[in-house]
Length: 163
Image (tube, rainbow, N blue to C red; front, side):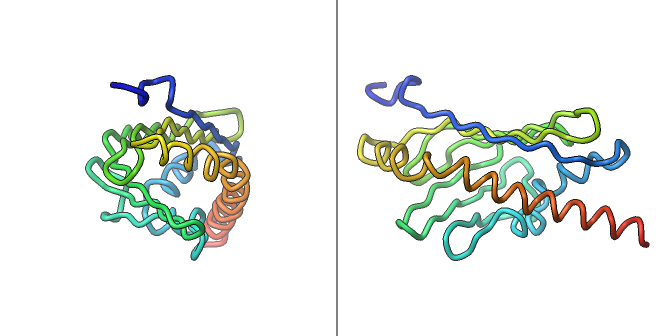
């Protein structure tokens, strides 16, 4: 296996608590599972975005994560979905190997959304690039994008109350 054994994989965890009524907890899962809703909170075009080949992150769906500065991409394939609980992805092409997860945990007054990446580059150069350029910015980026997600969910819940 060489230098790309498990000790070389970098784990990044980000999470956010999203307040939602108990009868609306599925809305958080839907904002990740549904491609159109996901794009609205996650993508920051032209800097970073994900292209999906299906309308939902169902098993077999492939997402290509694209960065423009510096130019970089990798693919993740959805390998398992437990509705309302988790989405598991695995490296599916490009310069990265490993797994990523979206986990949804019921919490008092809402849902805790956790996003975990356990990835490594396919060679030493790509791995160093990932570690030095992408990893340090991941948590700040996700914190910012989670704030967008929370606003979108709040707005959708308010619109449901009006109608």
